[in-house]
Length: 247
Image (tube, rainbow, N blue to C red):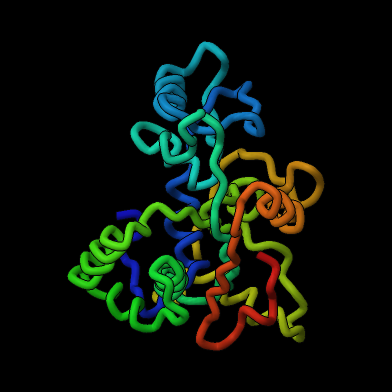
């Protein structure tokens, strides 16, 4: 629904972030909203849209963005982010992966871990069909493994606070990074350039409000807060992950 042209044999995690996650996680807010302190909660998204439609007495509406996971913090799914005492819950797995990997394989690796499998090839095959997806869903439910919480940066980091508006500084054409940079700019399946986001969410590339430089702190926090924390490594077919392991 979020990415009608999705091709599981071609589209990478980068493609999904650019074509689905970023476009679907923007929201309207009044002009005086402190976006760093705003999280989409129950009724908040609807309130922002109402303000946008009415012009808002607090100022003209502007377009901001959240992490995709914040979309889930509304309605019935709100309970999934709190325990019985109302405290925030933490992920039980940290997923290390590479955005150049097929998105299908990222999902397959997560499901394989949930099903206590060491490899994800067979799971990936099942994900290619609706019948296979239903089979996996039933298997997760039968084994009571559908409630494990995973941290995946593509969903949990606010892409609007950094990369949504562009692709960064173009590297030297003679450098090894140049090919990767150019590949990240276009849809792997169609070859068309990814659209950039026009939101006004402030961008933070370093410092306290940057969400992309907290890996060590996040791992330390999870180590203290989550008993039996596990790290899931989703290794891609070309082993690109080992050239850039940071999340």
